[in-house]
Every structure is written in structure tokens, then in C-alpha cells.
Image (cartoon, rainbow, N blue to C red; front, side, top):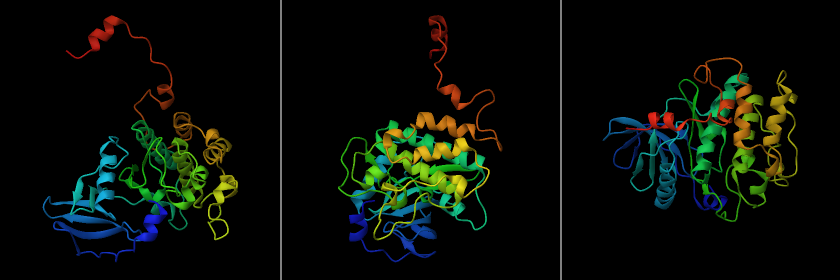
Length: 304
């Protein structure tokens, strides 16, 4: 969301469990009450099911986000169920915390392999978003729900922008996760989302942001500062992983790895826990050319 919308919109009173939203919704809990577009878990009385309800600032913003989400079809991206009452964007309810809550658990850090699993799946979702012609522009732990089984779901497409279209003339996103070129109102590209994913990985592994908290004199420290290696805050991390994340945080977008290069590298650091892939397969295989298939076999494999 742009800063002008945030400044021009007063924070609504946060609804409490039992309050009604529109005609068919009853609030069950608050997911994000500190935003100008608060998000709730609600009971849909007409459909007899829990939903996530994001209360948008305008019907236009609600319709646009539904349209953007409607162009996506990926297991790690939220689905839109429609709009209720003009401004109530409805999405499926995923039982699980946001990644932000997991990162901020006192005295507990996410294991390296678990963090790489989450990062891989979010990166795969971004591959899909970019393939559909959009940039997410607000990747952060607070916009990732971790469903049962450690399955991450990327949501909040309110800041999404079509690739190649100009921005609104002010930085878009959440300050610590905004790529330096967006801070300077430069050209946006998939590298913007890779920077934000890099900040998210850094935070998962260290429990802290890679750059100093913004201040009045330095609103966007990522524009001029270098991130400290993660090993300064967490011992035992592989040097190759440290270097990989620092490359994602490079101020020069052209020096950041592409998602096609990043995802196999993340997978290499998954060394424990449940199997990620069917036996005999790894994502590195996907980067290799397919074996040549004969015309006879292609005919046999073709639909009848």
C-alpha cells in the first residue's frame, strides 16, 4: 500500500470477536488490527465456514485485489473468494500463524532446514506471480501464513503492480523490506521481490532485520548501508548460505540472483526433516534440458 493511502486513511476501530461485518460475517479473531486495512478471521453465516476477511479502504481496492489474486493459481498463493459488502475481501481460512509470529517467538529460532523450506515455497510462489506479469511488492513475514505441515501461503496483493507499469510516485511496501531502487523510485522488476525475500530469510534465521531500524534522518538505511553477515548473529551457518542471502540484499538489483538460480541453492541447504520432493527428483533436475522424446513416444503420450 502507498504511504499516501495510509496517511489519508484513519485507522478504523478494531472489531472484536462477536462483532458483525456486513450482512453475513461475524468476527472470530483478529489477524492484523494495526493496519488501515485490518484483517480478521470471521464466520460466514450463509456459507457455514470460517473465512479470512480483509476490510479494504475502498471498493475499488477490493475489486483490484480480487482481480490480481484471480490471475494466480499456485498452492503457495492465497485464493480470493470474492467481495462482501463492497469492501470485505474474503479469502480461505488457513489454520496457522503468520511467519512473523514464528520469527518473533522469544528464545526460539526457526531451524535452517525449516527456514529454507519456507523460503523455497515462497520463492516458488513469486516465480508464478512474475510469470503472470506481476510484482508482489510487499513480501514480508507478516504476509505469509504458515499452514499445518509448514505449508506457507503468500497473501496480501494490495501492493501488487503489473511488471513494466510505473509506480504511484512514492515507495510501495513495508519500509524495512522495500528494495533500495524502490526507495529511490527507480524501475521496479522481479529483483524487488527477491530483495524482500532476502530480508525475510535473514529475519527467519537471525530474528532481526538486516539493516538498522529506519529513523528520521535515515528513512531507508538499505539505500546506503550494507547488511552484516548473518553469522554475526547466529553461529554455525554455512558460509555459502550467508553469501547467498547477502547477494539477495545487494543494493544493485542486477547483482541479485534470479529466482531460477536462487531456488536450487536454497534447496541445497535443506538437510533434515520431511522429504520435500518425490524420490529420485530434486529441483536441480528441473534446470536441466528434458531428454529428447521420439515422435512415436510423443504420439503415445498425447491425449486420445
